[in-house]
Length: 122
Ligand SMILES: [Zn+2]
Image (cartoon, rainbow, N blue to C red; front, side, top):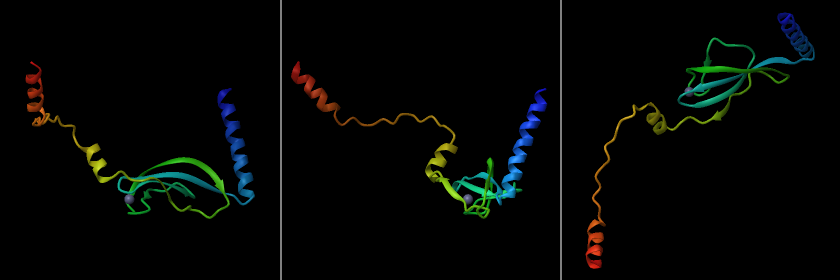
């Protein structure tokens, strides 16, 4: 049965996990923390948290868990900035409602010159 196969796969992963833990490895959850003001951070956590504060402003951020791994280093890992935040101008442009801008009439400084050239040809 299919479900049995899945169970076996999970059990073997548990086995690997227990083996690694016995060797002194600890579980690490790789998390992406996304702060609108400060950018995207990657962090290694020991476990899932209630909320993920931005490393810079400590505000609760949108977070997604990327992967589970094992490490012998001390946890949690220092946050690492992966994507710098958008500039305030870009953010405003993204948030702004699209508005239809009428083309501005620009005085054509060369129009008169062009006309003069045509006249001289005629
Ligand atoms: Zn922040």
